[in-house]
Image (cartoon, rainbow, N blue to C red):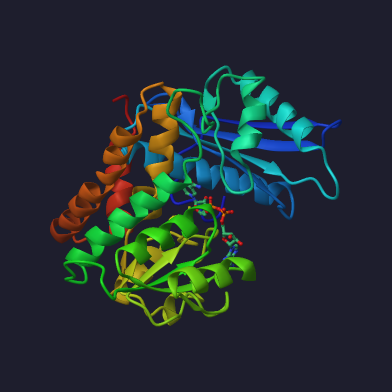
Length: 345
Ligand code: NAI
């Protein structure tokens, strides 16, 4: 598949359909070397099944890298559901999805991602135990997005210090593409730390709220990537860093939550050629998977999970040290680092 960063074959891909609910799902298990494949489920209006399949393959591979770098005892997997056209019964759709997950007997564990919610995962939980990201009575759990945003925030802090020579984020200009579940929390953290925000979202209600609440400058979705700023935080969908956008970027540092930000592997080289430091998505956006993984193992506790997420900054620092000796780009270095960890912990 064109655009996959590595030739590493996936262990297993389940393609399942259910006529009654309209479910069409692809569950990609990239690697179980470190443990069961763990990664969220995306519900998206894909153009066709091939596009969905490609997304599942790319995202699941990214999850292997993310889980390995985060030191989690899990492999990488991801599910995508092709959003049915027209009206559909959400409960039935996720019930059918749960049966597909359950059929893998624990090789894959699901959670929420773009287009899916904690309520959907609660429905899934009724039919399979291989699910996380659910508010749990008297125990740690729930929406992973604030944890993802916190991991991105501490990574921006680390990058701003080493790459931009900033001791704090006061006045730092950060452009956020996408004010969804993660982007919004990130905006809150950055605003609190004194950063200046430039934002864009296809939903004008979200940008208006950011303008009112954080004094954010609002630009259009076509302007955000090239907006004058110190840091660019892609927090919408993948492939935003590509042959068209890279020549126009003004940021010196890129650090955001979106999965698969590089359209093609060599886009990491193009960023480096332009003197832009790209902190790889799967390194900085691991806060959510850390949260759902701890929840799944029944080990979670808010303070401890936040401390574990904060340690993403240490890995960012280590990456920035490693590239000095290896001479690789951050993307290539993180790939090599993660690949070396795709073994049983
Ligand atoms: P979301 O669906 O809540 O938010 C995405 C936001 O981006 C929405 O507000 C949407 O309107 C906006 N958007 C879409 N296209 C846009 C465009 N062209 N320009 C500007 N805004 C646009 O999703 P969520 O959960 O915030 O995730 C964001 C990204 O982070 C996704 O790529 C996701 O895979 C990734 N991610 C999320 C994690 C989580 O814990 N939620 C964990 C790790 C990665």
